Structure formats: structure tokens, C-alpha cells
Length: 86
Image (cartoon, rainbow, N blue to C red; front, side):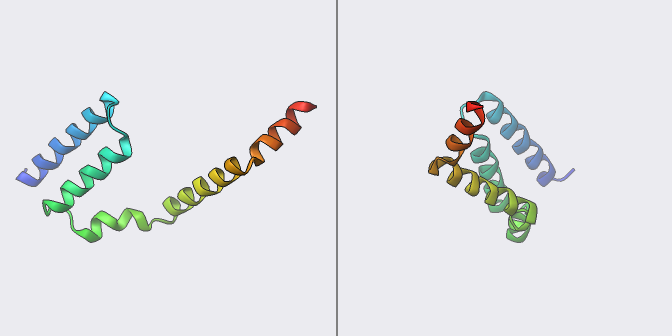
């Protein structure tokens, strides 16, 4: 295995340890690992950003926006109060 493989394996282990410690948010740890892999030249910029063009990811992100809007507008409270009243 070349140095890139060992570096990636070590980075994955470090990311796993950081996420399991609970001191850092998982999304920040994974974004940092992506930046390190991209900055070291192990993956190209196209490969690093390829996952963000996935339609499933965009759909999930849009659903988070819709859910936050419904929550902040009070729509969830109206629905829950209506359902629990009966």
C-alpha cells in the first residue's frame, strides 16, 4: 500500500476517534477529513465535491429546510394540539 492508503487509513481512524469522543460534531470532523484529503492531493476537487451533487442529498437538505420552517411557524404545535385534544 502506498503512502496515500496509509494516510487515508490513519485519517479515517483519527476521524472515528474524534467522533466517538463526542467533543466535536460529526459533520465538522468529516468536513475536516475531506479538506485534509483534498489539500494533500489524495482526492481531486471534483471527487471531493461529487457527493454534494447527489439528488438524494439535496432532497434531504430541502426537507430539513421545510421542517425548520414548519417548526418555527408554529404549524407543528397546531397539529399536535389538534390531535391531542381529541
